[in-house]
Image 1 (cartoon, helix red, strand yellow):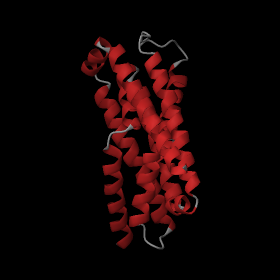
Image 2 (image 1 turned 180 degrees about the horizontal axis):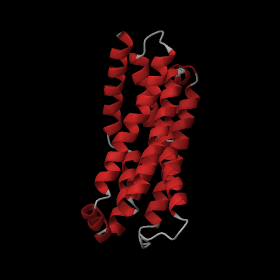
Image 3 (image 1 turned 90 degrees about the horizontal axis):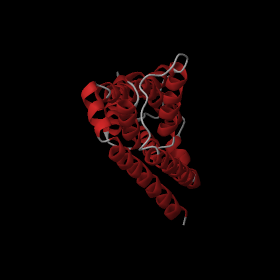
Image 4 (image 1 turned 90 degrees about the vertical axis):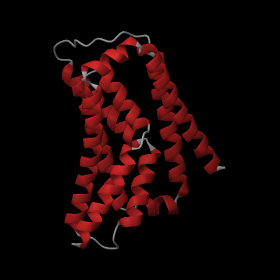
Length: 212
């Protein structure tokens, strides 16, 4: 019973962290309206796998590791920030490129795989996600727990992340949001790229300050 209550508390806390806006939401939202529903869901699955990875790491002592070796957290911030800067520049520079919604034969699977990979890398490069998992798990995990509980925690982390971002992808890949996006694609992409790049610069600066 105690483990069930703890699991419910973890799910509630992670859900609050997941729905807060950030780079992951921006990436999923743009992919859903700019490409296809299938690619948006594939990216959501990548987010889920990234969340499961952070859940497993948090169970293994991510918070304790960051506390013992602060340079690891600094490195995560800087590396994540640089990745977001790169992603932001790519989105910004591609703002004027037309979209092709009719992929040729044999292209569907690779595009979904690329979407999955982009979702995963965006998730694992986001220090906010690492902090949320480390803090929540440090606050709520019992001193000892069973293997079944650990497995359930990782599975729930995957389910929470995937469900939220899949919901975002399904909602924003509808026809009306897509038409609205196509009508102002250049400015939406430039704004998304600028926000993503700005978040990246902020993380790099924060990492440099912590290092200093």
